[in-house]
Amino acid sequence: METFISEFGTIWGAFLATLSLTALSGVLSLVLGTVLATMRVSPVGPLRSFGTAYVEIVRNTPLTLMFFFWVFVAPSFGILFPELGFWPAVVALTVYTSAFVCEALRSGINSVGIGQAEAARSIGLTFGQTLSQIVLPQAWRTAVPPLISVLIALTKNTSVAAGFAFTELVAIQQRLTNAHPSDGLFIFFGIALMYLVITIPLGLAAGQIERKVAFAR
Amino acid sequence: MSGSVLYDAPGPRAKRLDNILNWTFSATFVAVGAWIMWSWYQRGIFDDRWQVLWDPPKGQTGLDVWWSLGQGLLRTLEAAAIAAPIALVIGGAIAIIRRGAQSRLLSGPAAVTTELARGLPVLMLMFLAKLVFGWEPLWSVVFGLVVYNAAVVAEILRAGLAALPKGQREAGLSIGLSPMRTTLLIELPQAVRIMLPALVSQIVVLLKDTSLGYIVAYPELLRTIKSNRDFFGDRYLIPLFLVGAIIYILINLVVSRMATTVERRIRERGAGEAEPPEIGPTGPIPQSGVGGPAREEGAHAGDPLFGRGRPASTQVPTRDLRPGDVEEQRRLVEREERRREEQRHQWEKWDRFNPRRDNDEDDEK
Image (cartoon, rainbow over all chains, first blue to last red; front, side):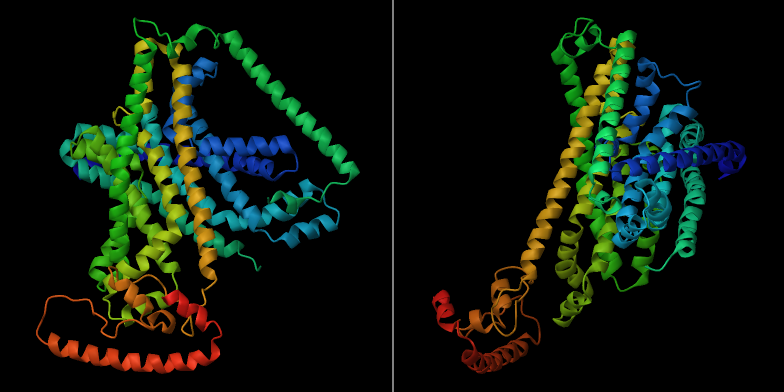
């Protein structure tokens, strides 16, 4: 308990690190995931194949393997990051999470009524217009709950960065527990609390947004 | 395919456009791919480093490399094979407790624990086991996987149990089963069947998460690749990594495919069941009985077609005698006789309406 209080500065820093990693890779994977979902429903064959291949491969890759790739393998391919730690983690998490965002959005797109797309087409909108003006705004709303669970999973997934030279909450847990072995359980529950501080508001926000953007079918 | 909703069947102009787009994007992909390959070639990615897979340096043979990778794969599968059954059993137990237990004393803490365990990173749980409990890497990995996945399995099964028709539980309670036995014998088998695809995908997640063992120093596949790299040098990382990635992706694809197959089979079987077989005025009798040889009797007990022609002395499943049992038995026998009487009566009535009777009698012989 004492350790938790005396080391709170360190833990707070780690909490901010986890939070910024979650926020940045969350936003980026939402963008990339939307692009991928557009590809997967587009009328252009090669784009569809690319989207499908991407999602299938990434979803079946362990996240640790993804981190390993960007940290150890990518330099051999000539992809160098300015510094180890934050940026490889952002890229790994974005590449990984965007596949799940894509799937959540695609299920949202599938849930939009056929009549909506048909109506859009019958007034002469093109594919791009149909998607961006009519279908995606509705798909987003249906996709909000699964998207929030993807974001909650992302929050937990940032912990993998602890194994790849980024100091966030789990890395701090490891360091503090090594330094104060007898306080291990307190540190564990303290760090757990930090994660819940991120995930519980996300869950609550999910409920709020769901209620706010709910629309009659 | 959802795409067909978003665009019309192409006319001549759209077909031309599609063609152009297809070729443009295909060409772009090929060009980008070729450019990447070329730049890799320039960096020497395709030089003799691939020999590490069959003729590695430092006096090793290709067999040694593959042997060590195989060992790593085995340890990955070992962790998953230990963790998966335990997680399934504990998850099932939690779901049963939350469903079947009458007291909040049991179900309340179970709910809180599952929520907490689901909300924490698996890696954190692994570090808890490794650093605080001081466990071996293998058991730390198993601990993390079990705690997290048991919570998720409990949640999946809870959803499955909640999705069952209310009548199932009521039927179980009304034939005198305790709430716990109703959950265990009647609801759980059905819930497992409904949620089987979700359970299999959770196994894929578990299998993927074994790679977190890399971080807690469990020598699984990824750690083996790393130690091979440390031994042979950074040059040889790309071939080794590629092999590892392909192994991981293949295994997960196979298990995911299994999930799809299971899902389809369930849907097919479910469709078969949706058409009730014509066996009499009481309709189909569900096969989920209390188990044992008494099941057949029980299943057909109320059935005038198959129940007919059975010996009059139906054996009631026995257990050790308790005080009052003799009376109970006599009452049961009396009830049984009364029921047979009614059945015969019902059958005679049914007889008049059933043109298929003769055939069915043949079946009965």
